[in-house]
Each structure stands twice: as C-alpha cells, then as structure tokens.
Length: 515
Length: 75
Image (cartoon, rainbow over all chains, first blue to last red; front, top):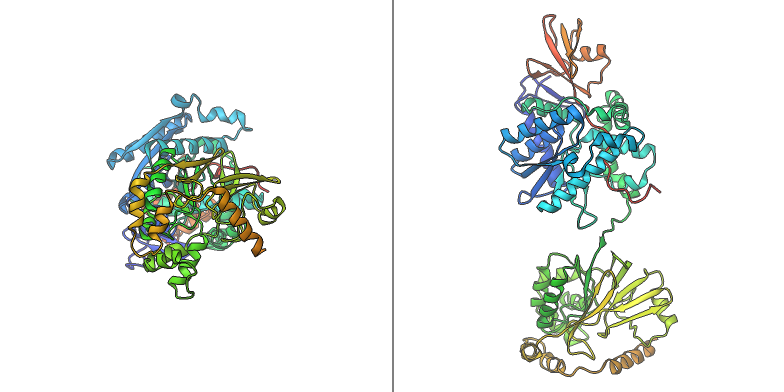
C-alpha cells in the first residue's frame, strides 16, 4: 500500500476513505480532519481559550496535541477519579504530557474535593459506575470552566464513541438523548459550558495511529471499571459491520447528524433567570441610555427589544447602540415593517415618523431590521414559557388596551403560552385574562401618562419599571435631531405627555371602529 | 514470528504471511487494532518474515457512552 500523498510505503490505512498515508503525511491529514470539524461545526476560534478534558488516554492527548499544532489556545483539565492504580498511571501520563509541552493542566481531586471516589459509585448503580462517573466528570468540567472563564470544553470523543452512543440510543429508542446527540452541545444554562467533540470525524484507530506516530505516551489499558460496559459491546458490533462494509460507522453517524437528528430534535430551550423587555424606544437615545444603565445593574441574561425601536429621533444611533449589546434579541414592530417597505421603495410611508427614519438607514441597518423576529418565546425562571410580541401574537398592529373585553383578548391570545408580553400602545399594564397573563412593558422612548422611560423586568416575577431621565437635557437634544419634521413637537411633548386614560380611550375607540 | 498482544503482553508464535493474516488468526478486527514493528505502524498488506517481531495494540477505549444531561427519560 502506498501513501496517497507522496507514494511512499504507507503506514496507516483509512479504509472508510479508501486512503492510506505514510508516517510523514499522516499527522497532517489527521489535523486537517480536526480543523475541518472545528471550523465546519463552528466549535471555537483561535481567539478563544479552550479547556480540553484530559484522561491520559490516546484520544484526549491526541486532541490536545493536534489543537496546539493547529494554533489553538488549549489548556487541559484532569480529574483524579480515585480508581486505584489506573488513576495513578493516567494522571502520571497526563502530567508528563503537559510538562513535556509546557502546558497548563488544571487538576481536580475527587477524593479530596468531593469526598468520594468513582469505585464508591459502583455500589449505587448495580455495579457499573460509568454513567455516574460521566455525570461527575461533566459537573467538574462545568464548574471549572465557569470558575476560570473558559467558554468551551473539548472532549476526545471519536467516531467510534459517537457511533456506539448513537447505536445504543437507537436500540433503546432514547429519543430525548438522540435529539441532543451531536458534535456541539450548546450551553442550555448560564452555568453549563458549551461542549464540543473535535475528533468526531476520526475513528479510534486514527487517533491511536496519530498518538503512535507523534510519540504521544498515553495510557493503553482500559479503565478497569468499564469492563463489560454496553458501549464496548456496541463498538464491537459496529466494528464487525465495518469489517464487511467499510465506511458503515461513518455513514451511520454522519448520516444521522445530517438527516436523522432533525427529525427527533426538540427545540433547545434555555431557562433564563432574568429578561429585560424594552419596547417602543422610538429612537429616543437619551431614554435608552438611561434604561440600559439600570438594566446593566440587574445583570439580565437577555435584553429583549419588542419593536418600534428606531423610528423616531435617532434611528441610526439607537441601532448602533443596541447592536453592541452582547445578549439581545429583537422582535419586529409595525414601524420596522414600514421602514423596510419604504427603504425598499415598495411603499409610500404612512407616517413621517417611519419614512424620515427610514431615509437615514444604510443597507446594513435595513438588513439588521429585516432580521427582527415576528415573536420570541423564552423560558424564564418563575414564569415558564413567555411569548414576546409587539402588538399581539399574530399581528404587529392590532390594538389591545386595558378596556378591551376579556373574550376579545382571549381570542387574540389563543394558543399562546401563559404569559404574553407586548407593547405598541405605550402604556404599561399587567392583566389576567382567563388562564393567561398579558403584560404591557410600556414604552422606553414615548411613554404615555409618564415622563419616565418605561420597561419591564421578567423573572422570577414581573416588575414594571420606570427609569427617570434628565428631561432638561434630553428634550433639547431630541428637538435638535436632524431629518425628522416631527422632532421638535414630539420632543416638547415629552414634558407633558397625554394621560394614560386619555390615550387608552382613544386607542380603544380606534380598535372598535376597525372591528 | 513472535506476536506480542498488548496491553498484557501475551505472546503468540505463528507463521502468517501478512499483517492482515496475523489479525485474522487471532480473531481480531482490523479496525480495533494497530500492528507495529520497530515503532512503525504496518498496513494490513505488509508481508512478514519468520524472524519478525510485531506488537498488536488495541485502540478501543472507554466505558459508558457520553451523555448530555437528561431532561426526563426518552419519550
């Protein structure tokens, strides 16, 4: 057999790719596969620090080695599991590797820190501690990554590991696990770190060959606790299949990731602790700045903008400000829709409010607005599922006021989760209708019946918030906004906004006449 | 030739023409082992001489498969 790159005698055959490589060309091919997984599945970048879970075995050490050779910033983490001789030897191999390459290896001592060792778990779970051991390890990855600020943990799981897991989950139809199996496990909670598997395209034999050729000294024997583990049985079955059908393992796993997973996947839902809802900013930059300062002190997981964000005094400046926020999502309002139509020349604007703002947008601003979502549903601690919409779950302009009869509100909210947050009428409110709760976050930039900037904080309950900002400074600044004929009139209006009652009655009669 | 099977270094003497044949005689999957002579990995077609000494290295590792946090059992 000859190397497909240089035609010299080959050392490593990769049957599933109908390839073979000499010892000189093989490491390059191996690292290309790792690079491909990292970039194709957007695991991490060279600017990020990666924590590699190290066991002292071939996979984790080969992974660490390859990542460093590829120019990634990778530190190691080793957990002393307390499995007698095996743990001592694997620890020695891990430490020796780190020392040889001058690397940082964080160590966690299970016995010292947690007061137990993995063999103790064997009694708990009919003699097989593997599942509990995995849970313990994941707990420590998460903790260490969170404590030390690593955004991502990489593990050495290879093609055989992943194919065996998939096989087991299919045999037992573990659809919940199936839906989440993949090379990237996104963080589902602020304290759970993102986990990635850069070796998932490489077979166990490939990583062993890499370790041998790169002279990586790894622990060869298996964990004594794993003897008879089901995963080893699955690996054996799959290897028998591979023998007669080269490439079967790869097709099984990659085919699942490409086609099968979608069918069993449930939407990944993160439970958020706190969400700040900022609606109807209307280009009021001074009000937005004041609210964001207060929001920042609350440390929410997410800032949700509920539409009608830019149409008003300072559209471009407001968009630049919110684009810089690290955790924000955007619901589209009627003003965004109108601005895009006007920008695209598909409609004469109905209000100067939106047309004048749309004239100031760049193509990038327009595209940013076009990416706003019709509604956003979030899982929030203490509240459960919460739907954020601009006006109603189905429309960005239908009017709902505190005077709207219950049955009509219920009809609008049918099918929505228990809590719905909206804006649009610029008056804060919190109302129960049947089994549902309808919260109006109010308006940051153009609140009625209030000179403050109004918004809402969700989780674990609902707080309607008001942020006073300095009108003496803000009004002249707003009045001076260029390119909007209404700038001065609307700025002066901030000093004495119409009362909430007045506005609600007016909106309610508008609503009735439309109906 | 002398075949040493790791990790417990069990030794087998046999006459096999190729690397592939060594694994076949031992009843081992070619995907689960590497065959090494003088620190050099050999492909399965390499012809062996009777005075050769080769190591057979298992590549399988691991216990239970990794699992993400379960949120209740599968539906």
